Image 1 (tube, rainbow, N blue to C red):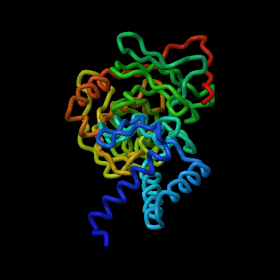
Image 2 (cartoon, rainbow, N blue to C red):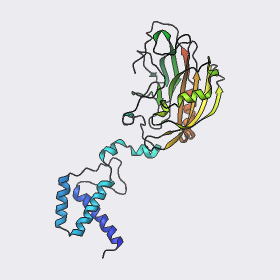
Image 3 (cartoon, one colour):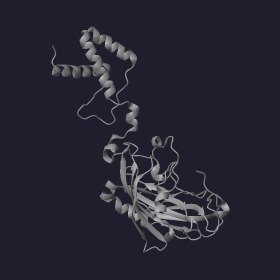
Image 4 (tube, rainbow, N blue to C red):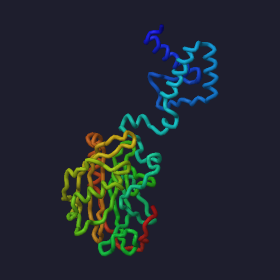
Length: 320
């Protein structure tokens, strides 16, 4: 009779034998596996031939144990496609994938609505010093709220200083971010609420509602939760600007866990417009305590949005 410990040892040995009989050229370090390790998928022919050879050298009990070991090995190791999608180093370091807005994450999802309309023929630019510049179209104070109606549009020049590179891709409008940490900032535009004529008239709850709506930038993987306005104050150094600090949690694409974040928003209403223009900077609370706060605050405090003087530039919205 085989004791339990002997059975386990035998099964482990059978599993190892199965692995190396199927893949004799593979070198596997079980104590220090490489993240890039790819286990080839055995064909039905390989499994059949290996099983027959092993059966010839063993009794029925050994063959059954070998089969169990082979099944364990094949089910235990991930497929190559899964390993290609998952960056283990980034997951262990940040608790999420390196590119939460990457191509695989974007599949089947609608583009977030930031309210930003770029002028046709313009690009979001960032110079060597980190200055980001963009030309956007907003509704004029004496027109309708339709930003795509050329006769009611007003050109606004937006600028801010960013330590992060400008994000490129179909889901981004005006955004600068670090794809490894998730720290970053993005531009958002919303119509003024009824009865408001300046940023001082805009309630904090309205700003939070616009930024955290179900179709917003922070809702790409689900609507944020635990949204709370922490602070709100006028910018003493820059009249016409208001700062709102908001804490919230949003869903992680990789773990489906809620990750706490902290955001700082600078909002203004450019003269001659009927639009609230905002720069939103944020980072996870863990990153916030490790130095991200300084980068976010510097970026947001540098934000400026000014109505451009009349010119011969075409006032046409760029196709999304």
